[in-house]
Length: 318
Image (tube, rainbow, N blue to C red; front, side, top):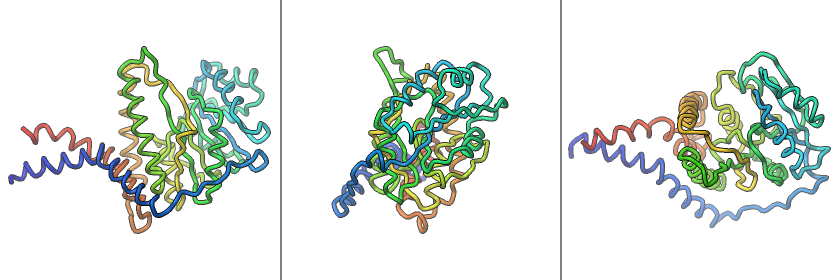
């Protein structure tokens, strides 16, 4: 068999494993694990047992969604006296700050006139958060009523340092190819995250909704492209798990068009490579065990080797 033929079959095998095979292997591993170890069911905490929590929203020029977002925050099923809502606005030059300060006294507004980016806003704003749990969410997403109560419940497990909610894409009959494809992708991605969590730990969190133990926060480099991903996995580096909750979800609309979706995908691809370089300790299976396998299979291959091999398949086949 010629070298190029061998290379073709290796490339094909890696591509198939990355996008399909890992899901099958993951499902089988979960079934085997749960055959021997039954998942622990803990009762939901009562209102008295719930910890204080901060809902943290980093925002830039979000005046169009402020009212809807705040109404949604106040509609969440969580004791009002235990839920603190913080908006950290970074360089907003529209009416975001004025609308919050005049119309929503329930929110704490941390405004800085200089635009430095979302990561810098998180680093700055977290210093004002003193609750044991902090939940991050985007201004343009809506959370379901039980989301924060379910997140608090997941933190009853002392090994859980981060809780990732589910991202759902709102589509309708008029959804274009960008929104339809994005929704399909996130449904498949959500299924993989749920299986990852059941095996050991989810391989990262999405910024639409995730929460951490405040004590585990570490300031991020301000040029970080995927702040949610790096922040959550650095918690795994410290020996904690990321729990994934499909019933705690954030709903947002998909990309406006294919051009906007392309820009988002380019940013994620660049951020993925940056994250791989910064999270290199997770490659060590002697320290992180099964999670190193999950991380490489679910994230590293998809963001590094597999795209190259995917494009190489056609010339190799010819």
